[in-house]
Length: 188
Image (cartoon, rainbow, N blue to C red; front, side, top):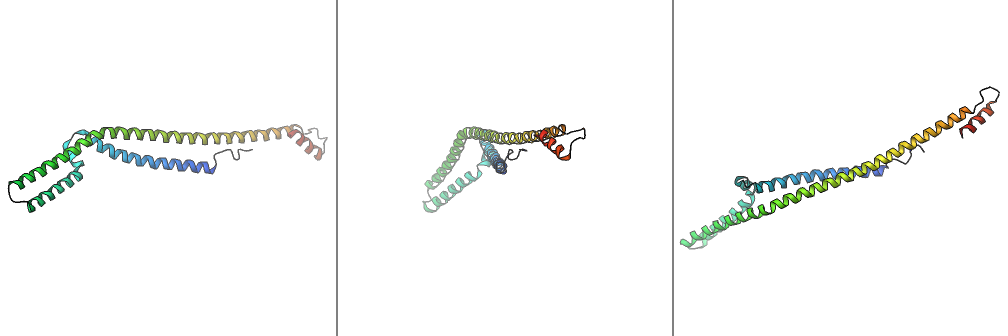
């Protein structure tokens, strides 16, 4: 009666709010991560050597530092012959080869990683939207059922009152007790 207990419960509303908040947090985090990884992979795939060099500077600087340390070690402990110069040149060649290998490897995986992350993000976004829509639809149906019950209850009461009024003696020949009896017999 009067739609009591027919709308979404406080627990359902709380769960919907928690789902919505978690979905928003995950979406924002996913968008941020996806944007960063997309930018990384897109830069690698661009082929722009200066942008790639800037992007990979932490890794290439570490490789260059290791190469410098190996050269310093070679120059201190090897003889001062032509072998030291050749050894230093070999270190430079190895370092360049390592950098090129890293870039080639990243280019090969960047396209598939970019497509995979985009596809995953799209799928998760659609799932989240479907879940939120389902929850919102359920809550709307519950609210609608509550309103329908309120209208039915009010209509029933109005009909009873009108029936009771229609059963009253309008000639003035009934006592108060008879009028009350007439009203309630018409209202039921």
